[in-house]
Image (cartoon, rainbow, N blue to C red; front, side, top):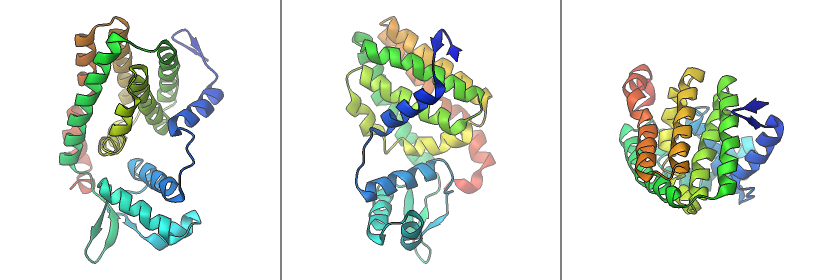
Amino acid sequence: MALYGTVIDVNAAVKEDRVLATGNEKGSTALQLESELKRAIVAMELRPGTRLSEADIAERHGVSRQPAREALISLARTKLVQVLPQRGTVVAKISVSRMMQARFVREAVETAVVQRACASFDGGVRERITGLLAMQEHFALADDHASFQRYDEMFHAALCDGAGCPLAWEALRDIKSHMDRLCQLTIADRSAMLPLIEQHRAIMAAIDARDGERAAAEIRNHLAEILRTLPRIEAEHADLFE
């Protein structure tokens, strides 16, 4: 498949980038379980208000109750689950306040990242980003939302890598989940996904031109997209919000 002059093997790219997305980390059972529960919460497979039982989680994933307990404690710290009287542990409803705070922090960090990228950017990472954007377009045209969002995350992680500050993305991983849940509701089809890819390309064009002011403006515009859709999504899915 060729997109924008880039020839890619979709199956090979998916396999490679799945490894890159996870860092090929084995981690502890609790960490793996936390990662899977977090993915399900963000993907709305576990919707706000869903009750989570240590025993049920342990049985479903074939583990003891201890890692299930540790995973829930960690998710509670990031405010993705909460403990309610008489109900136990449930998936937290979407908090607009937390989402706005997460967006504020993410904008501050990623604005600094793209400005740094304009001073120096790794050539190998730049080449990889071309492939990531081609793959993202492929999945947008296929209306594959889950894969599109995964490649969206890899694009932003690659920005940090290319700018020489991968820890910046690590610092954003937990808080960005509060934006990701809302994005799950806003990016429903290709008409919503394709403009985001063009915004990614605009960010990279500014970096290629070494224009820090323009790159900062492009990343701010990109991260403000969620604010433009928030009123409609909150009205359509009022039961999912605090």
